[in-house]
Amino acid sequence: MKYNTEVINEIAYMLAEMLKNAVLVQQKSEEGVVRIAQIETGMREALRQIGNQALSNLLSSLQTTPVAEIECECGGFLHYQRMREATVISVFGKTIYKRAYYAGCSCKKGKVPLDENWD
Ligand SMILES: [Zn+2]
Image (cartoon, rainbow, N blue to C red):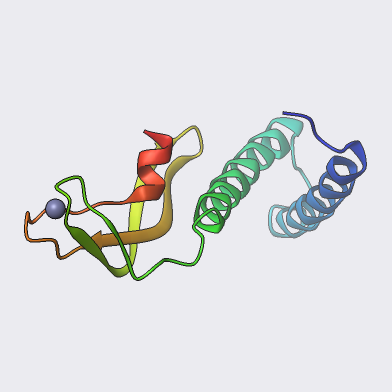
């Protein structure tokens, strides 16, 4: 994957401002001493949470508008039921996203096409 340096710089600037505010709040509450290790730990946790939310948003955004019905492996038809949550364990922790779920075929099987794209 290639990344746009300008976008990375913009996000890094926003993250630094967010963490600077958190450090300033911590300095006031702990009488002025904040160690670099604390800043690193706080930044790592913030990046983990941001990554988790960004992955969730990305996965959910890849779901296109569901069609009313799709073919079933048995030759019948599956009907769109609802947007259903899924949880994956990612490097960011438990990541939740939503995707279309199909069921209602006489064979009683369900199908989630988006998950099948990702194995
Ligand atoms: Zn079927």
